[in-house]
Image (cartoon, rainbow, N blue to C red):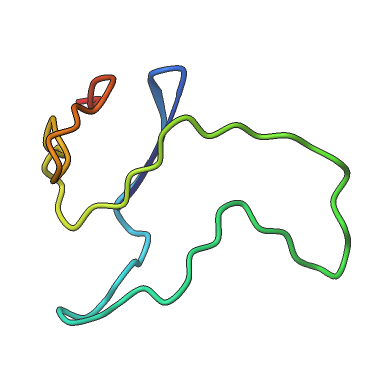
Length: 76
């Protein structure tokens, strides 16, 4: 599943996006907003405040493994 929020509004939600297709599958690379077609894109800027890669649809915990509290809320 792939979901994207902008300014706390869900703008993209697809369940037909293939991710890892095997139980023991792994990720060996990750590309965020790449370009192709042998053309260099114009200069643009993008700021990503939060990026979550999860192993389930459950919200992440409120703290990391070291007890550091995460800032913000998980969109429902």
